[in-house]
Image (tube, rainbow, N blue to C red):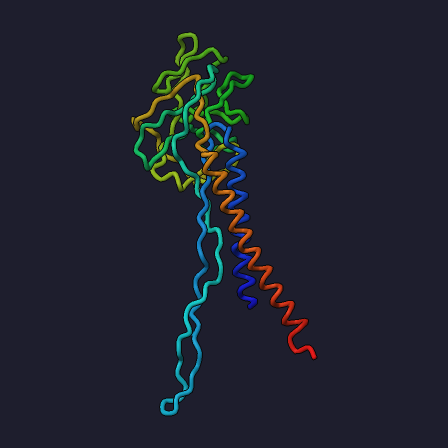
Length: 262
C-alpha cells in the first residue's frame, strides 16, 4: 500500500512542476521574443515482480507476477522555437528577425554576455547606451557579424533587411546573427538569453534566409488559450492524484486504528 502512496505523490509533484512551467509561460506572454517552454513527463522504469513456488519434482521455481508502475516525473523542459508574430512599434532601436530559414533551425541575435562569451536572444528590444553602443535592455552589447560591438552614436540610425547599420550615411556594422540547426541544444539563462553548453558558439547565419525588420518586435509565441487549458488539465490531474493519496491515507488509518480492535 505504501508503494501506492509514493506513486500518487510522484504524480502530484510532476503536475505541480508542470503548472509552475505553464504559469511562467503565461507571465511572459507579453515578453518580446519569448519562447514557450514545453514539459516532458515520463514514467519511472517499471518493476518486474516474481515469486518463488515449490514444485514436488524440481524444487523451487521462479514465477512471474507481472510489472508494477512506480510513478512519473518531469524529465526535462524544452523551448518551442516557433516564429512569433511581428508587431510594429515605430521605435528605431527595436529589431525583429523575420526567419525564413528551414523549419528545424532558428536564428538569433549575437550578444556579448560581459564575460567574453557569446549568448543569443530573439528579443530585439534594444537600446543605445551613453557611449553610443547598441545594447540589450539589460546592458549587454549587441555584436556585429565579426563579433565586435556596434556603435551607432545615437538612436537616429537605419538597419536594412540584411542587417547593415548606417548612421548619417556612415556604415556602423552589420547586425550579427547566429544559426542553430538544433535549437534544443540551447539553454535559457534568463533575460531572454540562451547559451550553448561549455560557452560554445553557434555558426554565423550567413545567407540563411532572413530579414531584419527595424521598428518591429517579435512577440512571444505563447498560446494563451492552450496554456490556460493545459493548466486546468494539470490541476485536474493533481486533484485526482490527491484523492488517491487521501484514499490510501484513510485505508492506512483504518488498518492502524480499527483492524484487530476487540
